[in-house]
Structures are given as C-alpha cells and as structure tokens.
Amino acid sequence: MKPSLLNMAGLLLLFFSGSTFSQSTDLQKTIHENDSLFWVAYNHCDIDGMHRFVAEDVEFYHDKGGFQNGWPTFEQTTKRNLCGRVNWKIRREAVSGSVKIYPMENNGQVYGAIISGEHKFLITENNQPEYWSGVAKFTHLWTLENGSWKMKRILSFDHQPAPYQTTRKSILLPNKTLKQFQGRYDSKQGVITVAPNDNSLSLTLGGKTTILYPESETIFFSKERDLTFEFVKTDGKILKLIVRENGNIVEQDPILK
Image (tube, rainbow, N blue to C red; front, side, top):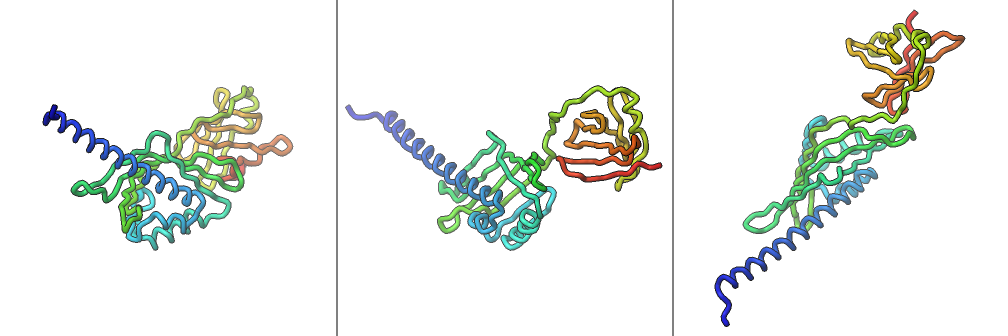
C-alpha cells in the first residue's frame, strides 16, 4: 500500500518539529551554560573571565547606573564598582524559575538568543554574614559572532531593595525603662527625637517616624529594615545612640543636653 499524502505530511511534520525541538534544546543549553559561566566570573570579580562572554561593542543599560558603551567602559566601571571596594563583595544569584531563553532567527537561521528573568544580589562586607541587598530584572541579548556566543546588549532594570523579614523577637519592657531613652539625639542627618510608646519607641527624623521594638533592655530594632539601635549608658545616664545596619555601625549619635 502506498502511503497517502496525509500520512507523508504527518511524517514530515514530525521530522521537522523534532528537529526544531532538538535545535531549541541545544540552544537553550548553550546559552544557559555561557550565562552561568559569565556570572561565575562576575561573582569572583574575574574581569578576564567576564570578557570571554562580552562583545567588544556591548551596550549596557542600567536603570540606576546609566549607560555604558563598549567593553573598555564596561571593564573600567566593573573594576571600579565591583572590584575596587575594600572589605566588600557582591554575589549575584538568579531567582529560581524566573529565567527564560528565546531564540532569535533570520530566515530560519539562529543568529542570537534573549535570556531574561530576575536576579538578586547578596553583599558581604567587613567580614560580616552575607545579606540579601536587592532584586532586579534583566534582559540580555546574546549573538553568535565567528562561532562564539557573546553578550551584545545588557539591560538591568526595576532594581528594588530586598524584601525584609526580621527574625528578631521583641521583649516586654516597663514604661519606666522606655522613658529613660526619651530625648533628642544629634544625627548627621538632623536631630533624632525618641519618645516612648506602648512597649516600643518612636524615632522621628525629618518628619518620618519609625517604630522601634525592644530586643533587650538597651537594644531596639526595626521591622522594616535590618537596623538596630543601641542606647549606651554610663552611671545610669544615656550618652549616645549607636545605629547599625546589617550589623555594621553607620551612626553614633550623642544625646543633646
């Protein structure tokens, strides 16, 4: 029996769809591997390793840091911002399940691919534990140049602070203890006013008020960010307020007489 035209068409469809699926799978694997190797180099501040995957005429668009045109500018900026800070290290990590890869074709020939998704950035500074700093979206255009895949266009946007959930626990303090912290403190950003509330303190600076919760008899914390506020006493008198962010001292504010 001769195969019908319908059957032959079905066989051809299966053949070509299978071939397309294989090509798409190979492309996704290649882009994923190259992308992963680029970020390994990024996380280790390996400029040469990053250069392997970046085109000479790269264009980098950042919604906070502006526009960078060409590898030399990209290299200088990376050395200064990523690799030039003492006791500070950044690590990038893709948000699981967010990364997608799309082929770019011209007359059926693949010439590039777009990879997009979300990633988060984690910071280590002054030998303190690593903390989650922020999140952003990204879109990268990879193109095939002389048999090698290169990132040609980089878009990094919608940068947001990391969502914060405190693990600190509040304790109960009597009003008498809370009242001893009441006063005005001399901050670099202006005068801080501290007042007691119901088992908490209100801290006001520049018209904005933050509620502080007691972790101990002298240390309070914010539920909005990783900030702690330590009231330092000598001979029963409050001398200053020490503010820490992510465990690092950012301010020491003396009380105003």
